Image (tube, rainbow, N blue to C red; front, side):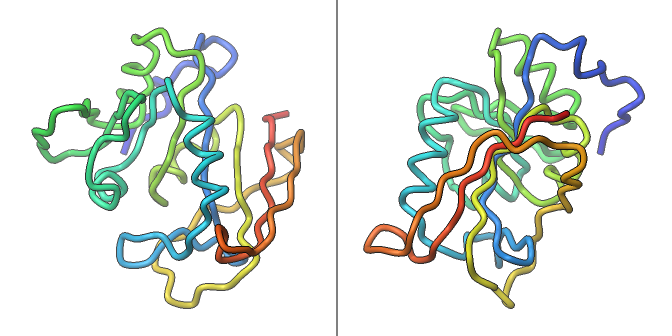
Length: 177
């Protein structure tokens, strides 16, 4: 997808690159281009964190959302041409980060999908992950492995199944060591 040899080292960037995701017990992200759960509290965390920032996503993630998310700069990484008002196209992750940097944003978010998360994992400065306490055998998209020796846990909050949340989940924030 991109040649990381030309990517600026993280400590030389003026932009923090963060990953935000919700994943099942077995790193499940979705099935048939859709989420596997309804977690209103997680969606509120997502909105609170990403509002006013650049969000970087793959084409399939954009298609699953169906429209640009308001209050954010929507950057879609794709080799296809998409002509939709409110999105900016990037040819690869490097290009997407350059676009985000050019906006003056101080923190931009990778919001999916699985392939883009895989490319971004080594480049990310921070992870915001909601760990959903359930298994989803129908999943066909997965989050890449997190090598916890590379990350420092900085925040944890528990959420419980209720009328807003279909499953228990634990929200965790990790900073790159």
